[in-house]
Length: 321
Ligand code: GDP
Ligand code: CA
Image (cartoon, rainbow, N blue to C red; front, top):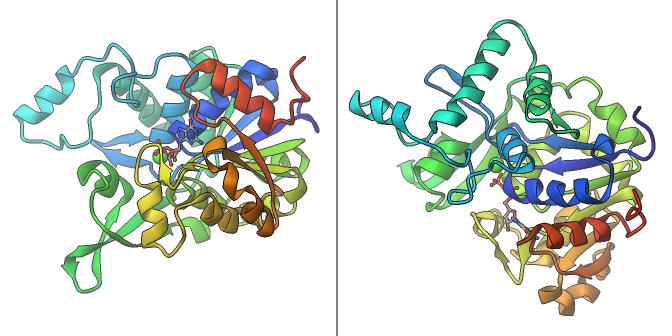
């Protein structure tokens, strides 16, 4: 039964999956809900694909593909090879095992299931005890306007056309969340945020993973209302993202790609920011932005490091659980 001991983790993909893998080592997974971005979702080949939900599921199931960081381990690519033979859409790789997830999700949604319902089914089928909660069951799509393509105003493309098709190697002018204004939080989301004992903002991309979660009406305000109990983990370490375009996107959109830039973005939302030991010298400047700075090893290279960071994020009070 949910209660004040619930932990809600505002989540993108990879960084969040690692954070969650640490948290479920130190607290009962029954208490943990990942509140997950759906702005990366897409429809391809008539299939419903939810990359951040799947990255978290596969990571926690121990089945994430270690070579790619996405998809399932032990993949084969025969279906994609056929698509390529026909000259179909092949820039977004879908392995044969992974395809089963998208087939199932698509069929269930066509039957009338919500994304929340089918996600719960998928998570249960992988034997996981935590909850994965898409922030909304409505359509919300991150759209990226690229500089240097299209006309003077740039070219607007979907998130995956930027991230995967162009390998996030092109300058970005702006980001918007199509559908966000008319989306509703999925059932229970605002209640969950209201009563959680701890809200964690995972070390995910602040612009394209965390912001689209907060863009669903009511969600940002619900997190702000709990600011004292919100702990964020910086995805930026020593001025860089570990992987992906978070550092570049921050700069392109007028922020600083440092823990200070993160502190300024998260100050209205979180009372505490966990920064890496590499940024210890910036702790005082982070605190000057109005957050408590906690310095800790934050690169979750191993399960032990992820568990250690989880203890820090949960104040070390939860070890016995
Ligand atoms: P995506 O949805 O798969 O692109 O992933 P996210 O948005 O969750 O994560 C991308 C961000 O997570 C990058 O900025 C990374 O620097 C950050 N990240 C990934 N792993 C770690 C980690 O172990 N520690 C920290 N502090 N950040 C991480
Ligand atoms: Ca993502």
